[in-house]
Amino acid sequence: MGAAAWRWVLRLSRFSGRGGGALAVLRHPAGSGVRAASSSGSASSGSRDDVLQDRRTRIQSRGLPKQKPIEGVKQVLVVASGKGGVGKSTTAVNIALALAANDSAKAVGLLDADIYGPSIPKMMNLKGNPELTPKNLMRPLKNYGISCMSMGFLIEETALAVWTGLKVMSAVEKLLRQVDWGELDYLVIDMPPGTGDVQLSISQNIPIAGAVIISTPQDVALLDARKGTEMFRKVHVPVLGLVQNMSVFQCPKCKHETHIFGADGVRDLAKTLGLDVLGDIPLHVNIRETCDSGQPVVISQPQSDAAKAYLKIAVEIVKRLPAPPA
Ligand SMILES: Nc1ncnc2c1ncn2[C@@H]1O[C@H](COP(=O)(O)OP(=O)(O)OP(=O)(O)O)[C@@H](O)[C@H]1O
Ligand SMILES: [Mg+2]
Image (tube, rainbow, N blue to C red):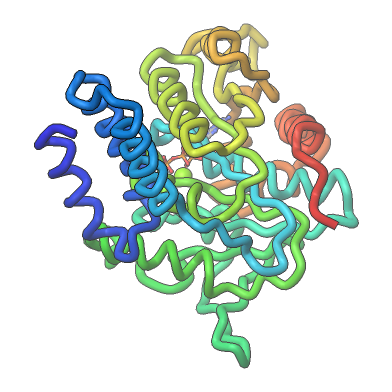
């Protein structure tokens, strides 16, 4: 491994404390580093190869995180994108509501993993501090039947903006391990933008049933959506499919349709990646307004085309999830 790569590993190891989390993924290159040494010709004998193979396996298995399920949660679904501002939170909120609306027997939770910019409190019209259970776990706040947890319930957003990486990672750990969700069929996690430590840490610390990648059809968003997909694949999180957001705007007066961010970019990307498009969500003022007012469209306008788009995506998601644990 080159000097730059080592510096990167050392820098991340300061975040990941016990050697899990983000560092674990970076240990895979250590394996390939050993492989490179072996193929350079310095280890020609079979026994030397065996020693190197053994060392590589040990390094890799040490680096593999021990995934632990979240207590009481049957299936975790992450909503991610790569790029910021493409509609992850809006989609996560409406998908959580749609999962519950499609099957009233299902208990659904929503975890806001965006530590710097939590959106769930506003979109779900929730504020206040969670109560503590006798076991000192935080009890989620609930609205529209969905149990929600967010750093926004715990700390002023302006204070969160200046948090260091270490604090962010410890907050993520708390959100994953110190919440009493009760019994949930689905926990939807609204990811922050990017493919950084938070995404890796979540992907490696808990078993994830599936990731849903949100993108607009424009090139810069697609590039990041591709990176996001590749990151999940690297850490063996099944990607259920892509959602194309804001692909079409229909003028409310003349009904003319405009593809402001492009028409079919997500469809093309899905083909390249061998994935399905789970659905299209139009660019519509009601989607924005209802989320801003804390009454997401699936709950406040269930008969609208926008709500129907989310309800259909939830059906597509459930079709692709593995059978839940009994
Ligand atoms: N289909 C849509 N139609 C209209 N507005 C939308 C749509 N999807 C999202 N929006 C709006 O776009 C803005 C960004 O959406 P959102 O906050 O969900 O994105 P995000 O990907 O979670 O952003 P961030 O990366 O900052 O977390 C919000 O104002 C939201 O209301
Ligand atoms: Mg968001």
